Image 1 (cartoon, rainbow, N blue to C red):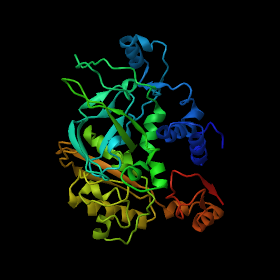
Image 2 (image 1 turned 135 degrees about the horizontal axis):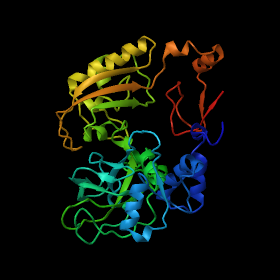
Image 3 (image 1 turned 135 degrees about the vertical axis):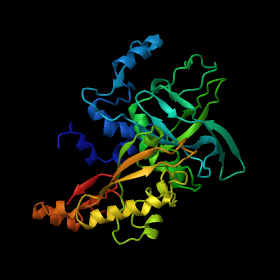
Amino acid sequence: MDEACLGDTATRSLLYPLFDHLIDGTPKDRVWIDAIGQIYFQPFGLYNADNPTYFSFNEATVADIKHRNPALAKASFHTVRTAEPRPYLIINGTMIGPTALSPFHTEPVVNIQYTPIYVGVPHAMQVTYHAVARSAQQTLWTGGGFVEPFAYGGPASVEAPQNNLVRLPMPPPPWTLAAASGISSAAFAGFAEQKHLDGLIDEIDKLVPKTCYWPVKTTGTSETTNFSFGDGGVMENYGLIPLLQRKVETIIVFVNTVSPLNTNAGPDERSKGSGIDAYLPPFFGYPVQSSGTFTGHNQVFAASDFAAVTHKLQIAKKAGQPVTTTTEHTVQRNDWWGIEGGQQVQVTWCHLDRGSAWECQLATDIRDAINRGIIIFCCMVRSAIFPTTRPCWKTVLN
């Protein structure tokens, strides 16, 4: 495959750049971010370890930034391709907790959003973090609004904001697309930062991305805290709730799962995460316990909607069709996510799974290869069944 093709990145292993950065002196909490940048962004001119580049929405937003910040007059910015309409980019991460308390108890994780125009947590919330290994705790404000990406990652201002503007120290280094994507893909962080184990886990914990964070306040000054961050999927893997925060009325949800849908699982089994992706039941108020993920605050739809949604997905799979269904819901109030509730939303659920009607149209040798289980992993990972492969690891075809 041509290296200029986006799909080529899916055939590369993260292991090699991870090892390279581990031995070349890269700060441990930057290793994952730099490996992500090297594999997924560098081939397209969007990452340069020696010359990190800001990002923004378009030429107009960049011009406005430079007008307000003359020191950035010669700075480079990546911008969104706007030649054709595209969905607005929202990269989801998770604020796991203040690094000084790690490892800490699990529930008070908070979603953080990175976009071309703003970064942060939309609603203000006071959170108390408890250390696991010692009797220590810290109560901090999170959220309250956003800052522009170029200004994110440094200490808070010592001055109160005026007219929605605040003077900040220059963050070192520039906040990049690779940094946002690196945080959003650091799925290991949820497990590593919540466990107090010796050996390998302690070493993995050092790889968890960390950066300065401070809440947005309309009056007074904010306190800067060094936070540990991880994949948005530590809390919510679909990117659904951030759209509900924005009161989007029509949503397509891609359930990109490693768990094939069990067409024989009953409603009670499905509500416990058996035979279905574990992130789905919590949206309807059915918490599912899973190591490294914390979904207990995610109910946004009525519990009574769950059985119908999952049953329709099962019907589609039994028929050999794409495992999709479209349903209507009334959004429930959720204070943890700052959602008022009450609005109506239409959701099309697309569950990653096999479609026998489509497979029957493939050449015989391809069908045979799929049925043999052609996916082999380059490291120790459980056996894969097409198409539910682990996305972090390189795959090869037998």
